[in-house]
Image (cartoon, rainbow, N blue to C red; front, side, top):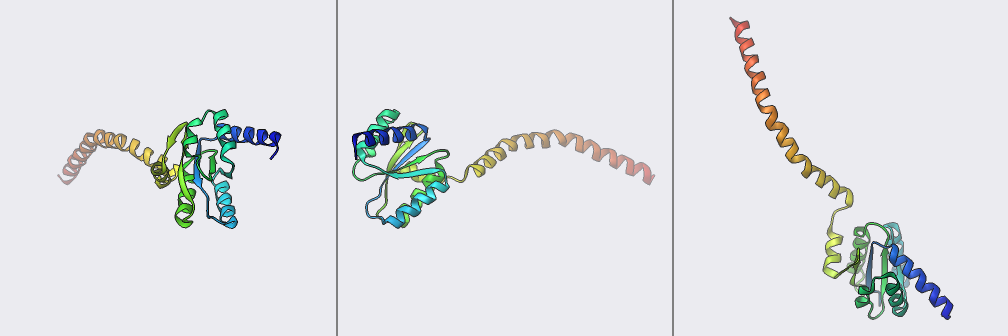
Length: 173
């Protein structure tokens, strides 16, 4: 690779790293080209870009992007998933493929500027989808309000019941 090409690749990787909410690093040794292609395709579908690149180029790129902490995981052959939006779905895909393809090994990553290890990536992958989390949060927020409304409506309901009984007694008499 020519020096100009390397500089362009480093700039491209740095731009992608700056724009990413998360970067997940994996050791791809031992997976076939077809398996790598299906992994890339599935990553693209969930809003991530999975790329195999030379560690020297990636180290320069993370320095430029201000994510030098990631260098810790750039040892040996490395492939990086650049997550454009939510990091949960790409983590799910990576963990799924790590289980299916034994040679693929997750090393760690960077989530919103903080270093994360394999356990945190697996935890991230175990989270329910964003929509489910939002609905659970909304349900938790509605619970106390619903309880308050029930408690406030209790005396009024009791008064209505008493008035109905009085009306029934007067009609019976």
